[in-house]
Length: 43
Image (cartoon, rainbow, N blue to C red; front, side, top):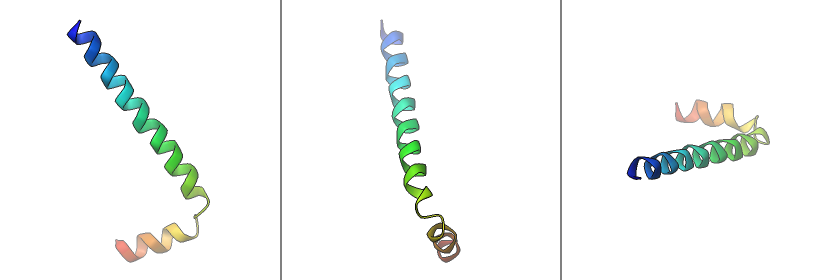
């Protein structure tokens, strides 16, 4: 039972990371000009 619970937790974690990654990339698409400048400043 514990392994099933751990598997569910892990998959939820991966799913949430994936969703947030999609949201971030979608958000960044609108700022494609800003990103290289931002990277240059902070690199």
